[in-house]
Image (tube, rainbow, N blue to C red):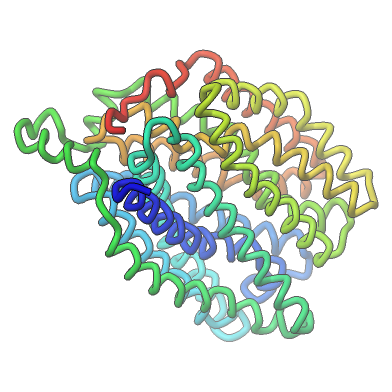
Length: 431
């Protein structure tokens, strides 16, 4: 193996490992909601407690556009490595706050207020993390294997979520339900805070990308033409901005519906126990994670567009039948197969969405161009998925969420059909 290829591989693995811890911290909240919701919200109805927790989960997404904006510009101006280091620092602080926050019984409404503040910090972190990591992995990979290596952005994203579920399964095995609800839910947040400290030091040793280095050299010669700002993004790249926004809308909603919300749906609507729902979620997510590099490598051969179009068509056709079938099965094995089928469909989006967005923008504004419209779409659609689904259920018409998800996938499908295949038009010029 050449020195250059070895350097790239180390950088990709290092960036991916940090991404895993970032998303573990983010998803620990949703994985343990069933246990800590009652500690923060005084209500006897489980759906209401979960809804309140889901609203705070959605509030964390409000900061993601802010994080995508501020930290996207930071990564474009100071470097991808600097952006990745700053994002993990904020995530660490948010996790430790949740781990140490007293319950509602101890400090009243101050408890959910602190919980909200911690999620706002984590939202700021994740808003910048996605753009910096997607840009870093796409730029560090070679042209012929860019789809494959950039897919590890979602491999580690899913691995973070899966790690959170595995921690939950371990704690469910060694602790009683009462202990988990009383104090055991704090353990995963403490673990996340400690791991984030280790990632901080790891990211400080990453190599910078050639795309950023060359962009800085060009920027030194023409500062005005190579400035990263929200104004420049909207004025110079409005079509790319809207494209990222719309291609993300249906994809991120589907991802959160089938991964984050699915654990609650299985327990709260399909009638499975919390342990069974967790096992189904963990098992299907593991297979889903393994599919990402395969689909990413496929995109290097056939292009990005066919995979996204396939997701859009299958999502429109099968969304309603998937949820209906889960409502009407009492078999864990059948539920596992149905959820896995849904996640296979979503793979057409998740495996390549990072590289597609990165390939749309020039290097000097790439991190901001990837991060900000993606974060806006996530705040509006991804972060509200649980809350909207639970609100439909509370109103007695849970099927309304199925139609809403179908409609948003259709919007993204139209975008996929109208956009070029970025493998052929990529603006990442370095190999």
